[in-house]
Every structure is written in structure tokens, then in C-alpha cells.
Image (cartoon, rainbow, N blue to C red; front, side, top):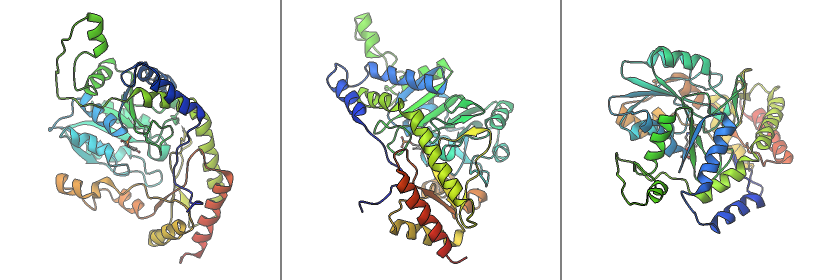
Length: 380
Ligand SMILES: *Cc1c(COP(=O)(O)O)cnc(C)c1O
């Protein structure tokens, strides 16, 4: 299937490869200078004071939950339309993820639904900038501060997005990114947390290194061997090889975001006249990073639509099966159908179309033609 158009794909150029080779030829393959350089570059790009690199977006969510002290008595509110890792981070710390429903037009966490799910045990809210569109942070911040909750942004879809002129990565107290190859920039596997809070940043740096309270460089400077492991931590470090790749990728991000917006614009124009193809609503107060381009088709036809497009070599996908419907969540937290009706009904209708910065104009055209033809040929 050489003509298959995937839903997402990374771009790696000669500069990226050279950056990794340079690290291979250097003294530090891990815990070296490339880590801090990458952290500083991301912090600067998103407008946050601190950035902490970790081994994946999932590790970033776990580190964030650890940093704010989530434990078995705590509830954390999350949306169901997200990758399971958003809620898993809460479960890793033995907390309880509580699912609040989404807005039907954007599939973003609905602040009114968050309000309804708050209990005396609620400690935090993780907003997810689904598809690359930032949530309504004015409303979410107000709600969080009224109830003394920590607001987090799972911005894994939203690197390069902005809300009222402020970049994703600086919109919540802790902001989570992933550098998996389908995301905007990649390090193979990788993640980052950005924050303005020095104490939380320090806690996450220690957490990613087994909760050992000094690093080897501090010991080297002091000329001794002593260290203590002060809590149960993990090895969630991101290597210098990966950070060098990330740093090289980051330079290209602004152009890549532009390309994604251009592709979305083409899709928007093409589908505007088709009653069966209904893209998610984009609010006027944001700049969209388009990790995904999601359309809704009538629920009864979604499955046939999906299969027809796959058969034509169009790499459509579905993001996401509502997290509270997964067997683990049902059996562990007693969730199930009916808990988030808006998300559940949206799930029946959504399809993600190919969206990546390296997609060619002719591939975009092929997607549009296939989507419109299939939309017309389906039973109404
Ligand atoms: C990709 C993603 C994650 C997890 O990131 P990994 O790097 O794959 O661990 C978490 N949340 C969302 C919304 C994601 O898209």
C-alpha cells in the first residue's frame, strides 16, 4: 500500500540526524547538556519559566500527579475524550479519575460539567486540548481557583496552539507534552512538563530520577558519593540523543504549525457544503495546532464510512474511545455507559482524517475527494 496516506507521520531531515550523531560522538548520551538545552528551548517557546523533560507524555502525566501530591484519597477530574494516559496518571498515584463530559461542538472539557463533578475530595482538573484546540481556560481557571483546585493542561495535542494570545504550555499550573512520532515534534518517545512553579519543577526533576535527592553532577562537584532516595521514584529520564533530536525538531515547529493550519483550511473549505461531513467547531479566541482534524458523520454510517476510506488508502482513525468505557476503568472505578452522554454520542460519529505537516497538496486533495464521494454515496 505505497499510496496509503497515514493519519499522522513524523518528518526527519539531515539536520535532525546530524544532531543525534553529534551526541553519539560526545561524552554524554544521557543526563548531559542536551537535556537542559531542550528544556530551556521548550520553556521559552511556550512562555513558561521551567520545563522538565521525561521519557514520555505518560511519564509527564505521572510526574505531574506526583508533584501535586495525588494519593488514594484524591479525585482528579478528566474528560473522557482523550488518550487513556490522561486518566492513567491519576490511577498510577492511586487517585480516582472522575470523568466530566465535554462540549458537543468542540469535544473539549465543559467547565459546567466540571463544576458538577467537584466533591470535597477533588484536588485537580486535567483539561485536554483535544485535537490541538485549547480549552476555555478563563472559565476553567475561575472554577479551579473558586474551589482551590490545581488546573493542569494535557497539551499533548496542542504544542504551538494559543488561547487569547497565550501559548499552550503556559495556560495551566502544570502543562503536559508528548514527543511521540504522531505529535507535532518527536524524540521517538518523550515528554515534557512546563510550569512557572519552581517547587513543582524540582519535585518532578527528582521524581524522574528515582527520587534521589542529588544528581551525579552535584556529587561530582562536592567530591563525594553520598545520596539518599527520599521517596519512591522512577527512571523517567529523557536521553541526550532524544533531547538533541527534539531541539532540532523544535526549530521547524512554527513552519509545521502553519502547514497544519493550511491543510485544515483546505479541509474546512471543501467540507463546508457537505451536510454529511461536520468538522468540529473551532472557537474564535484560539489558535489551533491541529494535531488532529476530526469530522463527524451520521453515527449509523460511521463504520461504513471508515471502512470505505481505509479501502481507498486513506488512513482515517478514531480519537477516542471514551476512556470511561475501557474495561480497566469499568472494573476499577465502576464507570460505564451513561456517565458522559455527550462524549458517548460523539464517539459514534467521529473520524480523524490524515493531518501531518509533511502531507502533500495532492494527498490533501485525494483525502477531500474520497471523503466527499463516500459521504454522497452513503445511505442518508
Ligand atoms: C500522546 C498523548 C499522551 C501520552 O503520550 P505518550 O508520549 O504516548 O506517553 C497523553 N495524552 C494525550 C492527550 C496524548 O495525545
